[in-house]
Image (cartoon, rainbow, N blue to C red; front, side):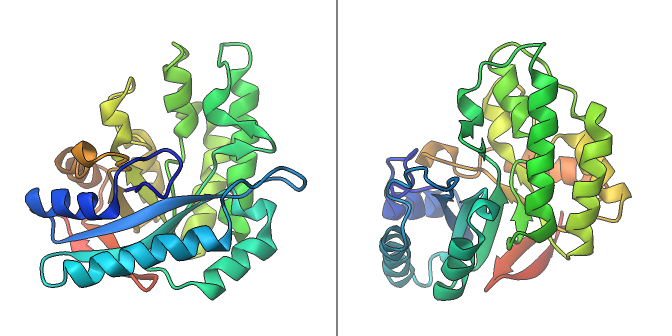
Length: 261
């Protein structure tokens, strides 16, 4: 979930924690965004100071809610391979429990701002998966986030995308994730939007499992309190249908397998 430290959320960490407790959660992870940009592109407020403030608020919440809620320190790194030195310094200078690696941009192209249509979507998908492979191959992360996010963005503009048409690109990504002992995220945000399913969907989860994938996390990708835990039950069912007996939590970047009930 994302707090007011992320540019796309306005909710405080304290409010996130209070709502999580009200909804019966025993453990959460705050995974605020940190975006990396191509050389020469303005970085905005994504600086080490930004992370310091975020982690300070998480630590304050850990003290306030001790005994009521376990609060993990997470971060979502957007295309970290475009500035590997900065990514390396962040992950060595700060201690996290859980690191998501995601792709939100290709070069200076912001994927959520693209005008998707039947003519351009194939090229965008191919470029996206090439970029995702770069991340899967050498990036420092625990799980890849919303690996078929193009499907969500395109659907918002009435352009359906069948990600299994890109198996030749997907399979090397998933195999590399497995080889490196990493995992993928089951992101529930799609349930709240046009595609009405998780990112990735059941077909890709089955493909990942058939290749030997074992590590999956479930994240609501909440940017407001109302979305905390949204789609959790449905996602555990999908995980079981895909052949997973466990979902994963992270503590100090070590995976902890939790049986799916």
